[in-house]
Amino acid sequence: MEKFLTDDLIAQVGQLFGKLTNPVQVLLFTSKDKQETCEPTQQLLEEVVELSDLLSLSVFDIGEHADLASLYKVQDKAPAIVIAAMESTLKFGKESNQVTDYGIRILGIPAGHEFATLINDLLLVSGRDSGLSPQTRKYIKGLAKPLHLEVFVTPT
Image (tube, rainbow, N blue to C red; front, top):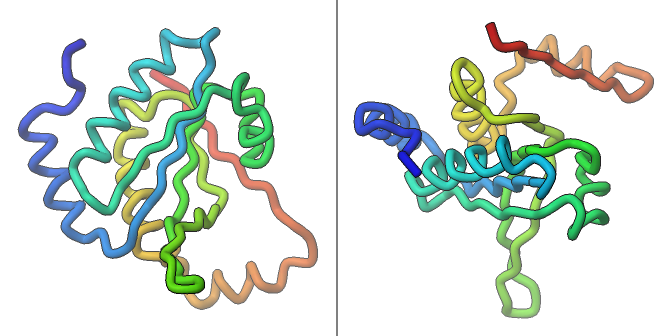
């Protein structure tokens, strides 16, 4: 299969990935019923994570890993991308990794304008900072109940 990322794009993304500071775990949830979108999504993500040692990718089929898909609330969505932090901890002299979920999801293949969103999300999670202003952070802390926010993008 032909590569998604051109040499020019690899150079641009590689330069941006110089700003990555902490490990990021990308989880891709696929479905055998949706291979026409899941396979290219996986290929694109493999090409992207290959550009930095701070990025890693794990792929799960939502049918075979229903409990994990349910945990990340993507059980009926494929392809679904979860962008999470990877935290290394030392317990009893052994290093262990823990995934910290910030609730960032991309549903479908992040192509076109959504590719920039994917790269930005990776940078944000790596920096462990949302970039929100102090005013916005204060407002969010004051929310009395959980807020579910979804952003929809349609192809043109």
